[in-house]
Amino acid sequence: MTATKKKAVRRAKKGERIRQVAAIPFRLTANGSFEVMLVTSRTTRRFIVPKGWPMKGKNGRKAATIEAMEEAGVLGRTLKQPAGTYSYWKRLANRFVHVDVIVYLLEVTEELANWQEAKRRQRAWLTPADAAMLIDEPDLSTLVKNLTLSQPTPTDAT
Image (cartoon, rainbow, N blue to C red; front, top):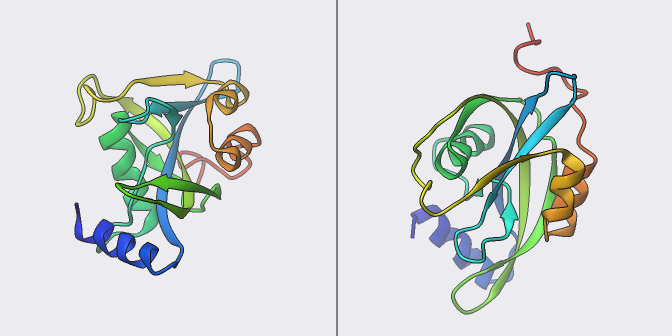
């Protein structure tokens, strides 16, 4: 268990809310719409987005980018502004804790054939509406279903 996760678990045991960061990988399609990538969780095999604990010395956007590489095997440009937030109950060894997640959009430029968690996860490209139907966390499902690319993508930004 990383030091950051241990600290978060200690805070959760005191009843404090804890936070994570997440990335929603996306790509533009030939017809101008977009798709998002979901990955399966390691234990329950539910569809989720790549997420993890904040990383010491890294801002939320950078940590979300690293999580996307480790859990989904994607590289790209993460948009500066968060796309939103959601909350969920995280299962720990002997309890559940309430976690607030800050979500960033990651425009995928490369999909790796082999990545750190490739043997433990599956990934899928879906329309936001289809992805939302597969996600169990209601807040995340709503966020994904209502996603728009109204903010400029990194390739459009000057």
